[in-house]
Image (cartoon, rainbow, N blue to C red; front, top):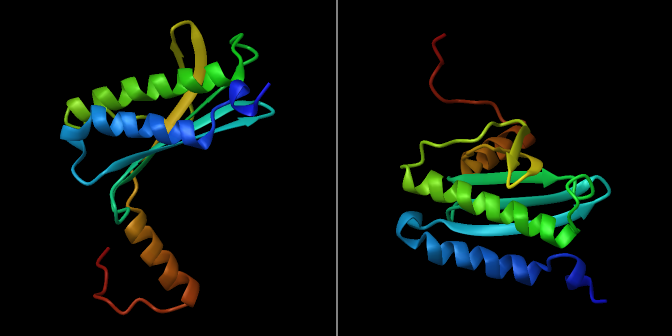
Length: 147
């Protein structure tokens, strides 16, 4: 039995992400999807990232499922999570991005399966710039902040 029969390959994740980009092309502007899937001892983890080219919009939607508890094989568990996240992004993108997830793990149930999901929109560009400044030990020399 080949490895990809048990789980998703990175190539399959890339193809699924490209499918989401085609499906939501009118809503994406310069944003793209990237999907990663991983099988761990405690379950299957899938992250679907929607981001723009400079990472000033960076939205990782993370999900996890105990595939044994839900009586799924790891591959089907990963595909289930990707399907759910696709449904979420459909609502998110078509509702003018007002549908947001919790930033901490939240229990969900969908098609009789129990899993967890979380997501937070970040500006990685600004965060990386701030981290670079902090790692150099530079002082902030901008305007004084009024509290």
